[in-house]
Length: 362
Image (cartoon, rainbow, N blue to C red; front, side):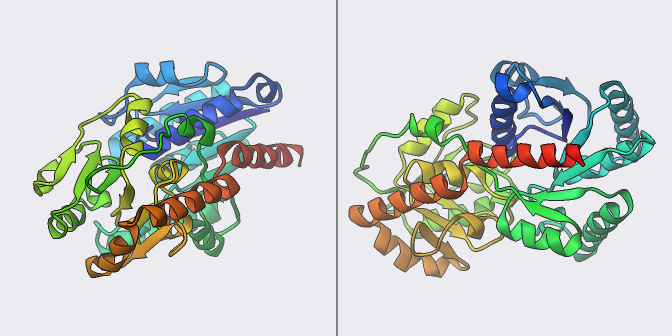
């Protein structure tokens, strides 16, 4: 059975997801029955093709194809034509599309094959949930999601519980939660306590991560140290004197070492699919403060593995509780156990493989 994955960009949490996917499906035993190809674009500056080839499993095939994130009629048409040609050459049994842009381009390319293919689609966060676009744009994205699935067919594989609820209202869907390589992340775990309480976040400094809120929280608590593990185009919004920006780190181990060094993880996102960085923090036994949005609330259990908040004022009581070492330790253990139960990538990828096999046998 041949499976082709199509993704617009291997960036952020999606890159971690695909790297883990490459090692699971690139395993010698799995590879005997499921041959995997990943088609991706390196258009974004944080995507390095050479690093991708070096870091991904040699048991999967990687194919670079130019796609752009934003709507561009000429470039999108070129991408569709190229995608169609490559899919004809590969002749896959199953095509799995990831994120909104690949979902659109890939479905059109599949249609142009004039051969019936089994199509799966994972949004990794629906575009119509974004808060940086107009209501009209949100409505248009919803219409695209609804009617592309209705017209072109396929089944949605949601990466989180709330995404699954939304997907089920649009069309045929199934839940396969995002997961992480817990053992690999745990290799970076060392028990430690900072003299000054330290709160951190991992990711690109973009509108979606809400750096202005992160900065406001740091200003509100000058006695606490804050760290942003990453960098990005909105780093100028980070002005509080108690915030340290690490800059880009290309080696995952360095990122996880920085992540292990904090006391509390915070996720200030405006929207999410199902955040890999939060899972990694939980695997390192960090209690989590997170905005009460789709994605975050599918991972964090309020008052058990961390706290969900709607306003900055709510954080006072949560931080008062988490300042105590023993409370952080209890929440951290709860977070690790939740990861083991629901977000183990091997368990979740095995389920994904079973979905592929079942659809192939039909």
